[in-house]
Image (cartoon, rainbow, N blue to C red; front, side):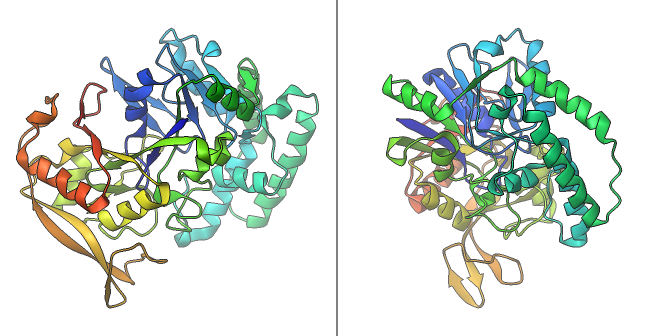
Length: 422
C-alpha cells in the first residue's frame, strides 16, 4: 500500500517537516506533482533546509527518494539543490531516482511565465514565475521535453523547436521582458549534465515492484488542496492535481493501492499570492500570526496573508482527499490569543451555507465565526500530549468533532523534535 501526505489549505502547511518526521517508518518517499514553485522547509540539528523538487526524505539513510512523472523539473534549480546537499556529505546519487516521464522546465518556459503574468496587469494570478504553468501547458499540448528524452541524441533538436515556439509566443505578448537566452541556455545545459548523472527510472514499474516486495511508500504532495487545478480556487491555482487523485496519475499507483491519507493543516490559515481568502485578517491579529509564524514563502520569500482557520474550506479538502488522519501545524503560533475564531459557515448570497461554493470572492460571501477560548502557555518546549493546555485540547476536540477525522500530530515548533504524537 502507498500512504499519501497532502496539504489541505493553500499550501505552506508544513508538509516537509512531517515527511521528515515520518520518513523513518518508510522505505520510499515519492514526490508526485508540482515543481520548484514549492518549498518544503525542514529544520533539525539547528540547521534549516529548504527543498524545492527533491523529496523530503533525502536526509534519511534508510529511504529511497523518487521524483515522479507528475513533477516538472527545472535542471538549473535542481542542480542548485544538489549543490546545497553536497555540504552535508549525502550520497544522493544512490538515494535519488528520477522518472523518465517527468517533464523539464526550459528557460523559455520561465520567460513565457513572466510575459504572460505581466500581460495580465492587475488581473495577475500571483505566479511564482518558475515556468510551471507553461510547462504543464506543453505537457497537455503533447510537445513537452521529458527527462527520458535526455537519453537520446535528439533532445537538443526537440529543445530548439520548443524554445523557438516559446520565443514567438513571448513576442506575441508584446511586453518588455529583457533576457539573454544564450546565457540562460548555458545554465540549463549545465543543469542537464548534472541531472544525467542521476538514475532515471520507469517510475510506474519501480513503484509496482516496490509494492509487490512489501516496501513501505509515502507519496509526498506539493502546494495544497485549495490550489488543485480542478478543485482549487480557480483560476488562482497551480497547474497540477494537488489532491489525492494526483498521486495515482503522478506516480502510476492504482487507486486501490492507496492506504492512509494524511492531511496537514495549520491551526490558522495562510495564502500566498492573489486569490480569494474569506477569513483573511487585516488587523493586529493577522499581523501577529504573520510575525510569530514567520509567514514568508519558502520559495519566493513573499509575505503570506494570514487569517483564522476556515473550517468550511478544510472540511471540503478532507472530503475531496478522503483524509484518514490529520496533523495540525503551528499550534504554537496561536499561543497568547485570548480568543480564537473559527469559520464554521459562510453567508453566501444572503443564505447560510456550510460547503465551499463555486465562487468564494468576498463580493459573494462573508465568513460566519464561532469563538473559542485561547491559551497563553508557550508550547514550544512541550513533548507530550498530556502537557498541552486545556484550551488547546478543547480546540482540537472541536475540530475533530466537526471534521470527523482524528488529529494524530500537533506541531509546536519548526524543529523535527517539536512534534507531539496523540
